Amino acid sequence: MAETQSIDPGVRIGHVHLKVADLERALDFYHGVLGFEVMQRWGKQAAFLSAGGYHHHIGLNTWESAGGRPPAPGATGLYHLAIIYPTRAALADALRRLIAAGIELDGAADHGVSEALYLRDPDNNGVELYWDKPKEQWPRDEAGKISMYTRPLDLEQLLAAR
Image (cartoon, rainbow, N blue to C red; front, side, top):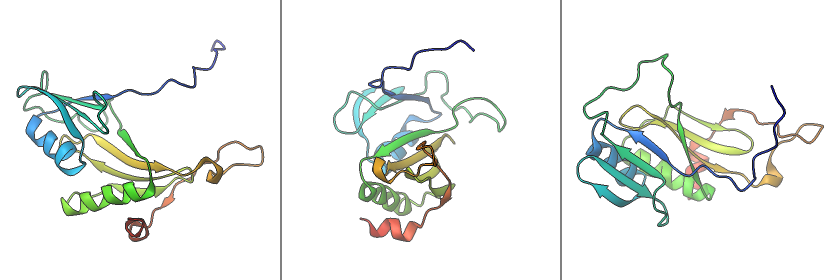
């Protein structure tokens, strides 16, 4: 593998655009449960959602997928999209919303650098909701490199952070 220069540290992931089977069902989840704002709709075919007034963080469309089925297990594709919350309290509020909507978690983990909730959207796309712990709290090895782990996350303790 050829040596490459590091990517500019200012580069960010801009948005995710998902193919969905039913736009209204997807909007019920991303807008109704998670609380993203609908910035624009293109009829019954597409919608663009945001947090904080950005043009869009999530695009949803049925252009190639109306009425479709999720990919079969073992197929390539999206593993999950990750939505970062600014604080532990904001993540706790997301958990409260999921519980109120009756949405089950696939898992919940403390990764040392972050705390995360894992679930599925209505189209069976993996979704991770998480917050990053302050960098000074990140676990490091003897050489000073980040040393992430996966441990159970106490959901009752998280809810208490609200």
